[in-house]
Amino acid sequence: MRIYMKTLLRRLFPVLLTGGILFFSCKQGETFKVTGTIGAAEGDTLYLEHRALAGVISLDSTVLKKVGVFAFRQPAPENPEFYQLRIGKRIAVFAVDSTETLHINVDASDWYNSFTVEDSPTNDQMKEVDALTRLAAHEIAGLENRRKTGSIDEMAFIEQLDTTLQEYKTAVLRLILGNPSGATAYYAVFQKINDYLIFDPYNRHDYAMFGAVATSWNRYYPGTERTKHLYDFTMNALKTRRRQEQQAKLFENIPVVEGAGLPDIVLAEVDGKKVSLSSLSGKVVLLDFVVYNADFSPKHNMDLNNLYARYQSSGFEIYQVSFDSDEHFWKTSAANLPWLTVRDPQSVNSTLLAIYNVRQIPTAFILNRKGDVIARIENYEQLAGELGKAL
Image 1 (spheres, one colour):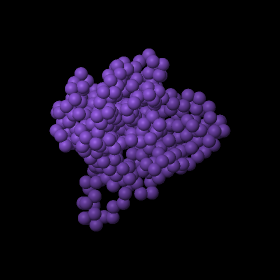
Image 2 (image 1 turned 45 degrees about the vertical axis):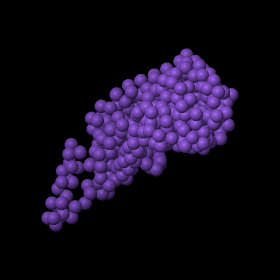
Image 3 (image 1 turned 90 degrees about the vertical axis):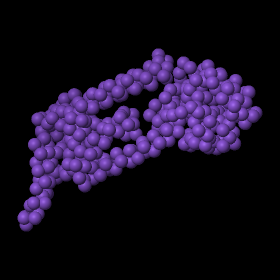
C-alpha cells in the first residue's frame, strides 16, 4: 500500500502543481520511531546507528534499565534505509521505510536468534537473509578447514564452494525478485562472506539481480543518494563485464588469430616482487593457469619441467598463474620451480578466469615473441608439438 501511495503521489504531482497548489514532501519534518525491549541488558548502553553509504553513523543512545525498555525517534528517510541496534559488538540490522513505527524485541543473552521486529514482513525477510548468509559462511569455513587438513584437494574445494554459493543464491533469489524495490532486495545483493560479495556484479547471471534492484529503486526512489550509488555501481559493473566479454571472444577458437594479444597480467611472485606478463616480450611464453593444491599438479609441473629444460635456452619462458586460496601452500610448492610463478589472491573469485575465458584448470596459452597468442592449450598432450612450432 505504501508503494502504491508513493506512485500515486508522483503521478498527481504535475496536476497539483498546475492547479496552483503548493506541494510539499509528505516526509518533510516527519520522523520514524523505534521502540522495544532489550532483555538481560541492565546497565548496558544501547546505540542506534545508521548504516549509511559512507559508513556507520551514530544517531542516539540510551542506558538500559532493568526492564530494558527503549525508544528512539529520527527523521524519516527518503527511501528504505538501514539502521542497527548495537550493544558492544552485538549488532542487529533492520530497515525503516518512511514514517513507520517499529517495535523491536531482543534478549541480549541470545541476541541473533531472539531479535524480532513485530509485524514487519520486510525485516522478517532480512532476518532470513542473515540466517542464510551465516549458514553459507559456516559451510564455507568448514570447506576451508577440510582443505587445510587435506581431506579434500583444491579442485574438490572449488567445486563444493560453488555448490554452496549456488544453493545460497537460489534461496535468496525469490526474496530479491519478489520485491526488487524493497529494502530486502537491496540488502540481499550486497551480502558478503569473507569480504567478497556473494552476488558477483561482473557475472552475467548475478548481474541480473543488481539490474532488477537498480531499475526498481530508480523508478520508486529517483534522485536519492542510495539510488544513485546503486545505479552507478550497477552500470559500472555492466560496462566492465561487457569489456571482459569482448576480450573473451579472442579466445573462443583454437588457435587464436595471431596479433590478437592478451590482456596484461601483473601479479606477485613468491618473494613479493610483481612481474608482468608483458615484460616477457621477445620470448616464446607459456601462460599457464593452474591450482597447485590439486591432484593433477605434481605430474603437470614435472611435465612442464621437462619442456622447460629442453627449450629454455631457445628463449622459452613459463608464466604460471596459481589460483590457490592457500597462500602458504602455494609459496611452499612454487619455491623451487625454475620458471616465473605468480598467484592471484582472489582465487576462485578472480576476474582473470572470465577475462581469459578459462573453462577448465589447467589451461594455457602460447604467446609468440611479439606477445601474440598463437595457441590455446586445454589438452596438454598437444603442448610439446605446439611449442615446437613456435620455437
